[in-house]
Length: 443
Image 1 (cartoon, rainbow, N blue to C red):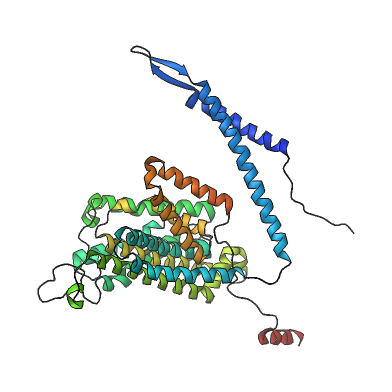
Image 2: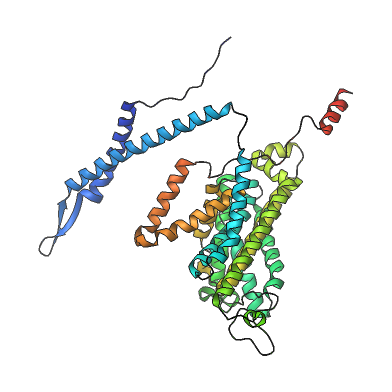
């Protein structure tokens, strides 16, 4: 009888130096034209000058940097392995689910208290509102990518459909925010079905390419169909939502009251910002409750089964067409709600707000947070919104820092910040149903 033992390979010092040497060689090849050679003004004509000293420093830095990065990755991997070995035999302790639940309640309490603590700080409330918009978008895309396993690179199209639906209905037909809310979500869901139906047989990269094209088609239509969307000029004067008919304006219209005059308080523009913040917070919480409930229903289990193995689903007689279409429709509907709120908050929208970059950011939120993780989306959305804000003092290096932070996070957590997947349904071996099933089988 033979035994197979899997052991972690320890990288030797010679292998590390060889690896760093290859990186330094690549840096040298790339650095010769970019750093080693330059042109200078030689009395009316350009002359080639050399900067081999700077090039040497660059190569040495690349060599040392690679050595340090390799050492850091190996050290972190070894420590992680030791922690796993130390905790593998322990049955007691706090489970990951409890930790996530505690984090969720802390985040909820902080989000409710934030406008109270920063009631006079417009920047903080505006930034928090932006975070919640991306959280809602991330939860919508999480249905398609994280639960159903369908890669969607054109999610911003549904965001645009929701925004333009409200903008046109309010400015052309005088609809209010609450009247247009279900219509915008329904239109976005319809577009989700229209996108999902012709691409049912596509998977992986091909599905990503088609959805990317769909997102660009919507943007190009909005740019060129000027009679419909006013083209690149966008749509302005979009009405803001009101609180049971009370507008957040300084001067009320004739025969009407504003929020400040109704409650007898002094007018402040912060009232509207705080109201919008709590509005998107309520919409985001409803989205979370809706998606969490769906995960426990048969449709949610079907999404997760489709993500794990589509062929097995077909073999079991599951209708994968309806499963995919439902994921696209519900994900698109949630994106449409977020787009509608975005239009109401900004008061102006244009096709420039719905570029591929937005789709990439939303997808990055889902992947970075851990596909299928609701709390992971919250953490990732907060990071991806706050990192560029903290980097404003570095002007042109801002996006470089943003990219470096993302790379470091993916090196540290390649499967996402909260990649732990808790099964939606557990089969209890001691349950009465199982015993009955065993009895029926025995009979």
